[in-house]
Image (cartoon, rainbow, N blue to C red; front, side):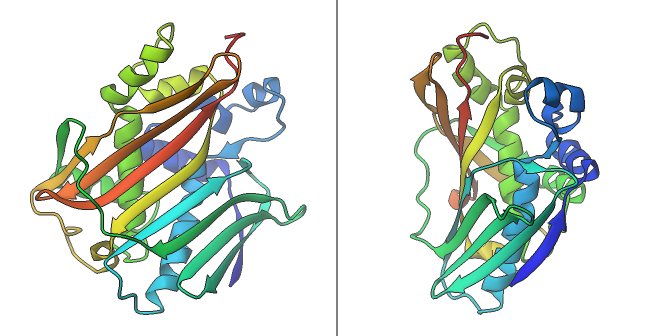
Length: 269
């Protein structure tokens, strides 16, 4: 299956309204050109929404029987605005894969695969938080998609966990231990101060999220915990940061999102 996609600044604005990520690389062309690029890019998380939706639609067409699934993505190149792309979805046995290709150069921007996985284990570390059901429902209305669509529900929760992760004081505290000179209130502020790219994104989720439910299988709300961040590298070579957040309901894991970020060398910053 193949389809054509083109992203605009409107797509970036919709994701920013949901996530709060107004990084100038998505909106300020002069800023982008000063960094050596020629075009604005859409958020990687926004572009991945289309991939997740079509992977899930292909999975749902096979009447899935497994209890848990993993979607893993490797991000290779920015997804530029006003540039034609081709999204390719392929079923290969028990694995469904996808690629987003530049229609002109055939360069792969990112690739994903959706497969059955082992049951989610309850994360043992991290302070417990709760997002009340009313707030989850409000955010579902702001989501740049249809959260009630069974092909998009887990993608909504993945996006929601990503939002909670980058806005969390816990996450910021982990980063500022390594980069104490930063003046930032959230990780989003860090993105605007130093060049950061996302390299990998992995989501493991319960197949319950592939079933229709008016309240997204939540009872009182979504409980979540952020795991300690793994930071490797140096200022001269750049840092690799891996962070993970788990959402659960009544102490049962529902979805886990792991994000890997890489900074450019920081010796000049």
